[in-house]
Image 1 (cartoon, rainbow, N blue to C red):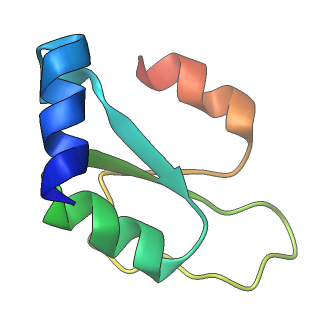
Image 2 (image 1 turned 180 degrees about the vertical axis):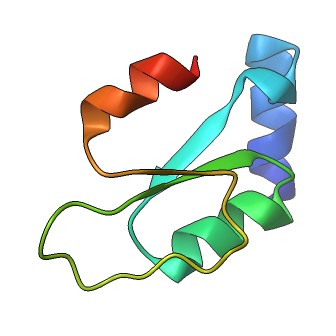
Length: 68
């Protein structure tokens, strides 16, 4: 995970511009461990549940554009 942060910092220069999109609690945990904002994707009929640790929750991937 440290390598990921280093790469992000080198390429983008700001970790604040990075979002980790995932549909499992492991995805949100990974984002939090990397100090990256997380977006929990919960489409209809999905099995994953938000943890309360995510930065945002979206129900349609097009909603992400509104967060940027």
